[in-house]
Image 1 (spheres, helix red, strand yellow):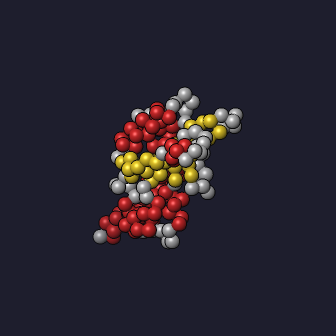
Image 2 (cartoon, one colour; image 1 turned 45 degrees about the vertical axis):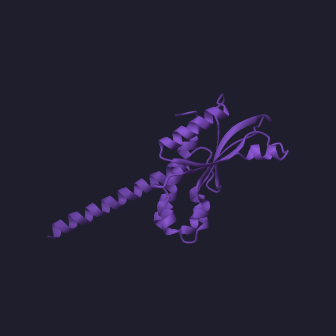
Image 3 (cartoon, rainbow, N blue to C red; image 1 turned 120 degrees about the horizontal axis):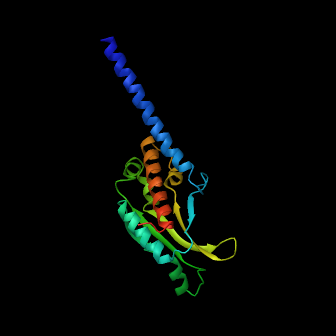
Length: 179
């Protein structure tokens, strides 16, 4: 009987250690992403040279839909600026995307997190070091947004990290023109 309890205890301990290691690996995978500033709400990546806005737009749609994200809204801020007689200085656009199988735990535990929904990805141009307009993709990081919630649950933290990992994958792949 004691041997059986000991075996169960060892099994549970090993399982818990393995889950902790997987969780830590998932978190460190994002922490080592090039260009990720842990103190910033924004993750930004330059688009591969030679890719056009249309290429990036098509890639972003394909990759996000392939990962079960719905493109729920597009806000063409640059076009709206032009209509008001302002120079947007290149492309300025925000996409709202959503995947209800990801992030649901956050909203169930903290309904106030809805103020950050849907997830936002921006396509924009800005001047690079050579004073030339360059295309970028940026996203609002769910893990950073979660810092605005008082006492977030462990489940919400895990869900926010998984969601952020997926969003980073989407913008990285789209920045390369992947489909």
